[in-house]
Amino acid sequence: MTLFELVAIILVLAAGFGYLNARYVKLPTTIGIMLLSLLFSLGLILIGVFAPSVEKIARDIVSQFDFEDALLDVMLCYLLFAGALHVDLSDLAKQKWVIALMATVGVVLSTLLIGTATFYLLPLFGIETKFIYCLLFGALISPTDPVAVLGILKKAGVGKSLETKITGESLFNDGVGVVVFLALLGIATGKYEFSAAYIGGLFAIEVLGGIALGAGLGFLGFWLLKRINNYQVEVLITLALVTGGYAFASHFHLSGPLAMVLSGLMIGNHGRLLAMSDTTREHLDLFWELVDEILNALLFALIGLELIIIANQFSIQTFALGLIMIVMVLMSRAAAVSLPVIILKPFRHFSDGAIKMLTWGGLRGGISVALALALPVEAERGIFLKLTYMVVIFSITVQGLTVSKLYRSINRTGAAVTNDPGKQAP
Image (cartoon, rainbow, N blue to C red):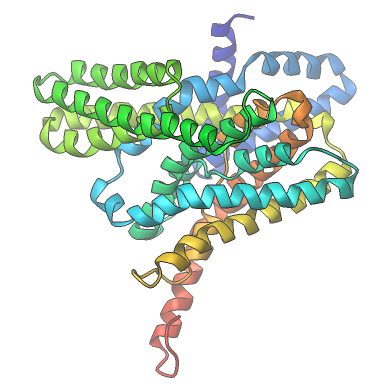
């Protein structure tokens, strides 16, 4: 089957799921498409009980679509740029220390906590593996997914300050998380020895190089956009900057995700205000919103369809382990966001329930699945992929559908305490 035929099948399915969700289910688009895709996959699996050839054909089709390459090498650059394009840089600057700590210290701490807990938990289920492989799992499941977060927070109705913290962290911590994952992967495969020089060098090249490239791309885009007034060409320039910039970053082993975030922030703020006419601004926003929506639909449809590949590998033992892992990931997330809040609380105000919201609003998504697929087979890829899948499905569906309810509940409680003359707000 050709690549065009594969893309056509996924696009038709995503459009069909999107229509059914908009017409009947009426959930947030990304969640609705993923749930319908999961139901579709389950239906094919059930049909396969009576007609194995049907399930085999479906599995063969889905297995030909390389989820890891499709997301990390193609979709991610456009999704990150589109997400960063609409983030207010001044709001982001106000939360810079919170975001910086959560995207660095928080990711590393979460990686260590999840990796250590996994190392001691797996033997209880008869699975023996190396500590470095457990750390790899911790690294791939720790970063919150900007694709999942941005799509859901738009409709969650959370406060501006909290939304900026969660969105800003998700935009930056996936780049840091990928660097941590690559560092651990190099050690696990024996390509590099564990040393401060190796980790520091990788961090400098990937992270600092990606930030520098993003700033350069943003400045170049601003310079080009300011000198013309033709919205067709200006939209084409932004598309070329994203595509060419990400390819350049991949070739020279720089952090493409961080480069896309920085360039998107610069063009979306300084470029929008100083280099674009109203007509260009309108068409640019519309173009990237459509790109964002279409790629999100394809991505979440693919997440649901991946069930066809891994469903026959699940057992009661795996399911029980997955449920425990969901709790572990949430507890590690709570610890990872609590540390920055505790460090910064003497110097700045945090809203009531900030830790709860940052914990519950830190969604995992396609990036974790893609990194799990990148694990070598000897690193227990099978079990870690299934655990990752369960965490991601829970995160997007349960957390994604309830994050706005949690926010309203915290606000009501805070308001009631504040208005009670006998009590003080926490």
